[in-house]
Length: 353
Image 1 (cartoon, helix red, strand yellow):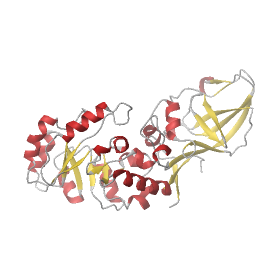
Image 2 (cartoon, one colour):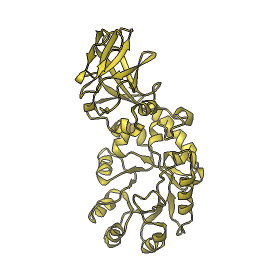
Image 3 (spheres, helix red, strand yellow):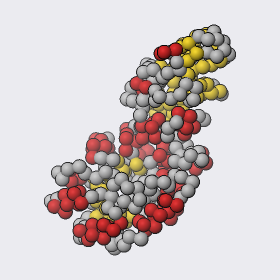
Image 4 (cartoon, one colour):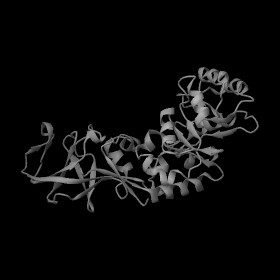
């Protein structure tokens, strides 16, 4: 089997669930598992996820995939429904759509079978949701219907300057709440940075998988453990004399004599092609080495310098002692992209199941 795989550590996931539950206090923790659990693979996480009381996904297709796996808990549809007849499926399957505009609200009011729903408030993200001034009328339209409550999402809770997030919370917090309605606002960043926004339900995504939403704090700083590791191995090594080139377009030229390794890792696996030569480092043994040249569809090049490593040497692309947050920063991107973009041909090995 090709030596490129992702390891999924269920002990780390269990640990993170405990940490987030403690952080949430009295609030219920909703497991955000959209994009196949941020690329980790929902199916691989089932031994732990089955314990979660509620899930959140982007759309119905993802929710139906959870049902196919045997999960019976409520599932929030963060983008709501895209056609009126989808509400019938929601009612039958226990999906709870977020209603974010007048069209969805009208569909819901005229539906014969009405699932539990949430009213999405645009408190300052300006993507989806009713403006605060529109909320009282929307709330009135849902009186007597099975609406669980109000929901919103933060735009800047992961930044050092929390003024925008605090303004969002104030706008949301000021809205009148009918008796029995709940509120959900906090994502991973707000769960740690804005304790006042925990409200009734919190929705951690990135933090659930042991990644930090903050540029200046690691997952370890937050007490979290990485769930996913991306592993490869050395396929071949070559000695390059100074001035020799390697890879497509000779995208790497050796500045001195040394060794070059080829590893199994490419954009066909979902690893970004556009990274700058030498920017991203991988870990081999106790040291890190730069990826150089152009990332190809199936392979990448690692400059070893004077160290000649044997074929088969294990390579940690990211994970555990070489955090994905660090690699993402080197690549000029965010951790979300490195995990969610992994392609299906990267097979999964489950640890501590």
